[in-house]
Image: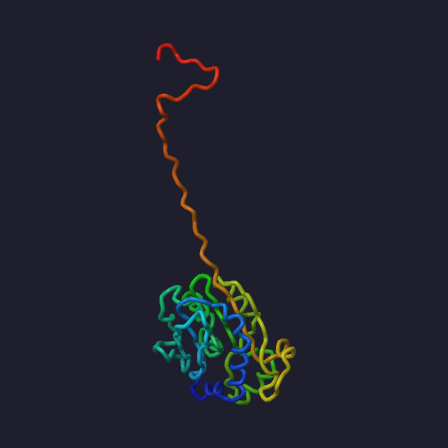
Length: 227
């Protein structure tokens, strides 16, 4: 997508949706702890959440097929981080603009530490936001992925899904009651946790121990006179 197309995420309706998503995410994120978190967002002004148990953030923006922000890299390359680097990875609408969304999801899982949380937000394809996005982007709308599809992708990446929820307004200019948002909201969120590695016990080899010479005989047994 061009930068002009990505500017849709800076519009007032989508900024409002991003804010509603973060409010819905916070109860699940408050329990995240560790040393480092990664936020990959489509909006360069998107600030990471303030979490009491996790204070160090790396921020990346995906725009024009490149990662920008705290570092620069090509968007179709692996994330420039070692395995298990982050206790929390937050993808905010990034899958919608990625040319290789499945690869990006696998990379997010790779850099996520065992026991860490992956949080994903996006626009729901079966919502009233789709025609608005088509109109605003003149047909060059981002690729929206349904949570059902994402669940299949996520489960392939050693992740267990903990929560899926629809959030936000039914329509970009309409305020929505919370109950309606959970059923028909324009956005969604997903929380998944990476499985912890199972420790493989070491199989110890039995060691032969010499029997002491003065072992007592069993009751009723007699010593050989030749001995």
